[in-house]
Length: 148
Image (cartoon, rainbow, N blue to C red; front, side, top):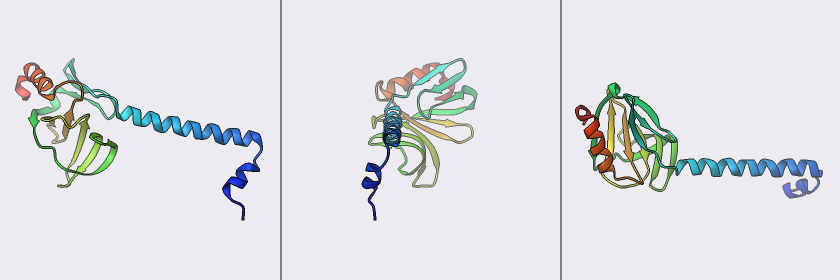
């Protein structure tokens, strides 16, 4: 029985090049995906929308926001439904231990976290890595006093 390496050795040079370039492409895609997960998300308020930039971000009309608050507690995340999770960075949709589906845009473990609750009941937990969450919240409080 031939091993995979022996099969590879018997390939013609053209097929070897195709395999080599395919492996390089897979590596570039994998590294790029991880790099996107480590990019910083930001909260931007403009034109009646609160935008969460970056991977797994979204644009939320201010009229769809019920409450924006600071919280010291983030629910324990049981499993990732769709997203990125590496160390303290968690981005995407997660299921909590209580069975609730939430969106997490956690760039760091810096507390308190910003909790955005939509009128639909959907919750988004946000934390910044570059700017203080407290400072971001205070800025939102000035701009959207009836949502905080």
